[in-house]
Image 1: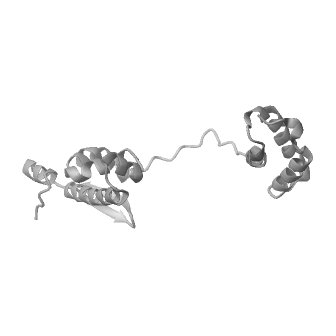
Image 2: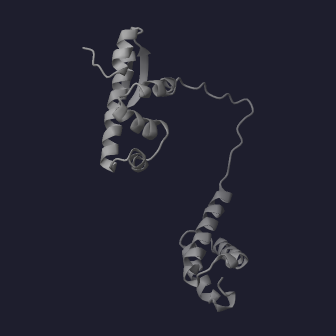
Image 3: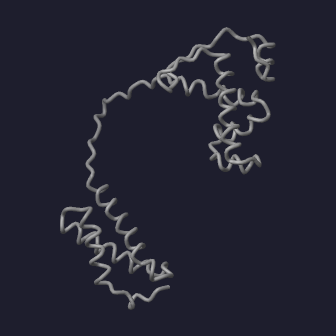
Length: 191
């Protein structure tokens, strides 16, 4: 814990005035924010072990107070009671999403876990590499190749319409035979 009596509070106040003054135009608001920062710093000074970190610590408090200042100034307009919410659009990505876990299970062993971890569970590829015991480039390669296999499976069951890089619509193809599904899931390419 640092000793509050050893701190040059006038110097810290001057630094804070410049910092806040660059972000807030009203001089009275600057003074209020700096005063609040100093009060908060005195109240929480027991949390700071190293006096060398004091300027950075005060800067963080000041930055948060500036954000709070602008948040408090935002005005909101009440919405009318009779306002009707728009109907939600049918999102083809949302309607396709439940199909993906089953399709991921059909990927080859090499790519299944990489795609499941990265795409379905949201694990960063660096952690995917660690979990699979492969290099980062190996994990990236497995995810990319697995995505390609997954795309082929999706296109086998659905006609997907793309707008740019986004799915804008899809229609299910005629239900494939059990043999076709089995061949797709075992990695056999159908011509």
